[in-house]
Length: 90
Length: 90
Image (tube, rainbow over the protein chains, first blue to last red):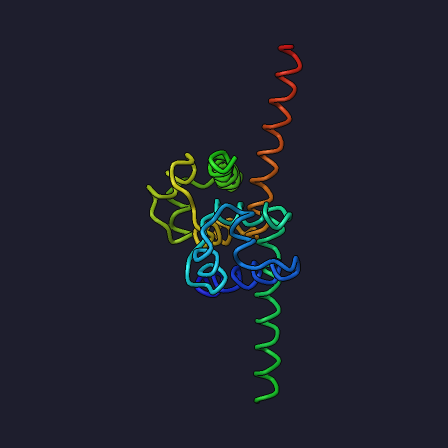
């Protein structure tokens, strides 16, 4: 699940960024992170530290716990969808 | 503030560990992390990744958002205490 946490964190960041209508460049600028690093985080290729997560949360005007809780909700939705698909397939 | 976030995260982990009456060894074992690394995280010397934070949160039977929210509360308390001390000093 740790590998998927990294993926879900990326999805959460992308969703919150898109809700603001921001490009990756804009998010990178607001969070004082490198643009290509933000792209890696969104694609689940880079494992964010809690400091990176904090910078992203501030840029997205959400608290750190809120960002992680959004990430946990995405995970729960995906698990639920997986169970549904398994039920349909069986 | 990012530097103090790392410190407050360490304090949050130590507090939650002590609430369970666990040693660092026990937390390390439950979270499948190295004991000395857990010590570094608690002392704010190592910056945890979201995966490390997740492993610690599972071991402590709290969700990831809950752990980070505990960390943010510690920060707010310290900021409030700083303001009080400044008011007494002025």
